[in-house]
Image 1 (tube, rainbow, N blue to C red):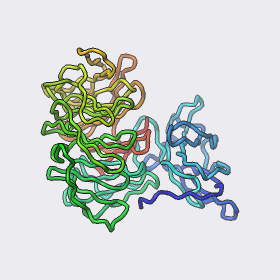
Image 2 (cartoon, helix red, strand yellow):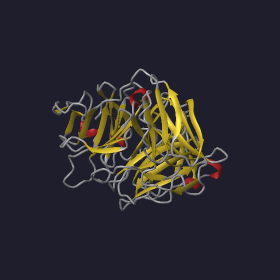
Image 3 (cartoon, rainbow, N blue to C red):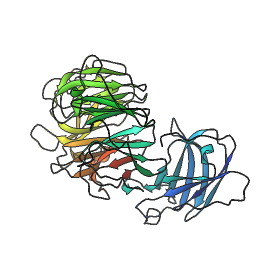
Image 4 (cartoon, rainbow, N blue to C red):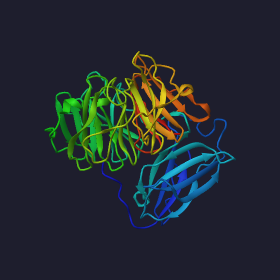
Length: 455
């Protein structure tokens, strides 16, 4: 099921069916296709006040995300909108926005990358949702494991494994953001991962005892045990989060795990070649994020050594920045721009909710100080937090409290700062999120239902 969509040479007649898949006329000599807008479990997405009045459908450039062509603009409500004849040769992403009279986007959704020629006489679903809130997606997973390990497969699939799922610890699942369908992965994985790296359609599973790899695209290939590269062991990174760089290099950051301080980072490039890199200070519960033009930023997690380190692209040893040691554990990190990282959630050395703070990667001195935003402080102790950038002033921080219940806060540094909780549609334990089809963030965990958040 991981074979990419194929393209065909001739133009395609496209239409968009709002809220439902509607059949197109079969008598046309031009191949036709339907883009079907799905609201999943949120039936009132288009009708709840304030309701959008216009549907705007655009083709987006796959690389930049910029609008390359407006395909349609039509008043709502509507059931079927003709997008006209479109060339099938270019790869695009299709975005549908429901806007109000002032152009404010109230409902939005974007397809995965596709070639229009692949849609001959077929239907492509696009999940659309109200902005700045969670929404239930179609097709639940078979198991609602807590604290799963997630991976991005080919920019289209969310691969779900590990976590807490009695009797299913070696099972895996896939959620297809192209067809909005869920399926089971391999019937039995060779080990239950604490960390995971997926390059192309190959999966590297890491636990305390070692690592194994297997193919998602060729079931005939048996899983194999993997020998660690020189300079470290898989046990030193097991339990760490995986950070993806724009060149598809994956960084498994051992210092982000909840226990066992470590300096080790496992790098896996797009071809699956692995190597180790190191921090200067052993850490646990640190925050990590990729910052374009800088590299991998790791902060907190130790009451000794520098508070922030940066591993440059291609580097093997991180460079400390001039920040004092930071014992905060469990915080999340979000890159607001090319020089500033926002840290939120987590707990301080006394076990209290940590302050929300911004670090300046361009600080030129040996005595840098983080900027603290008191009004943006997450008001509860989140022991394990993920951070997702939303705009230049705000981020979404999602984490688990001491009882394992998951909470999401939109934290803003603008206008004095704020931290507002955004409830999941379904109460969750151990929810985890991943960005596979930006700007949407896909969340699973604690319930079979999949949820999405779009700024």
